[in-house]
Length: 357
Image (cartoon, one colour):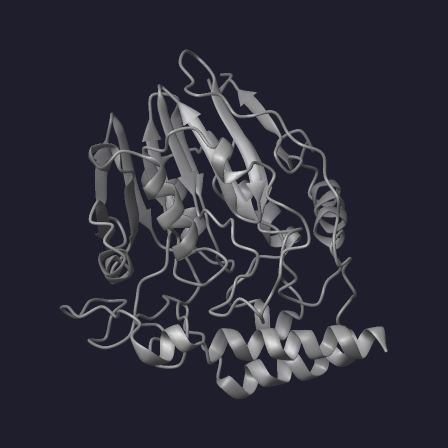
């Protein structure tokens, strides 16, 4: 019975993500000139891949038999409140949940893919529900200067969270929200005018930090009508401490080595390690832990932190499997486990990113 319960949840969750009201009614879409990854209507990956609604239904149906059960709730202790600001030689990183991380350096507070809502869904009664509270409460966040959004899936672009963050700060100190082409429509609709949409390899600079939107192998869409109609991507932050890379969501591909060729070695990287089973569906858009280790090597990252796990059940693997598979992959590829770590939910850790020559 428990298997059937979780399988039905998965079917509901996956179909909700495809047929969400937001995407069907008034989801913003990009309109602009054609490029090598925009055909005039939809964006495309360098390595072609696509999934149909039928594929998504199959994903949910077979979860009746293959999806591992997750705990309904995990109690967690209150974590220390993050620093107000961080200066000096250190970079402070706080892992909040899923792909949400707070990066603090040179007096600048950067928040990536912030998600604090109970569900990652267009509905408050259905869709993937969190199994633990955020590692840091939203009201305990320091003032945010920059928010980076990798793409518009509900587990990365959480409109209510963005509205709450913006509302906490004076209007003249509103954070700059940076995302891919077309996503600004969401921010405009919600009267959050301090935003910038970027194409791959375009950039914006804030307080001495250059924010570059880079290629990822993924997709976008919050419903039927807006599939692939806004741009997805990753972020390369050029800072006084070196290059910091936030992958967001991505499948494996040559873009990792291309990134290294274009920008050099990466000092600090955030790579996804969860939501990767079954591979027939997920390989085109999500790294598994083995591929995350390969990506870590491709970009010659000095320090990598795993993200995108342990908060919302999106795929078949158990809640602990990403960390188990990551440990095995690090050993198989002879990578020092200190180079590729995970942080506790709400854990803050400081890093000295000066590469040892």
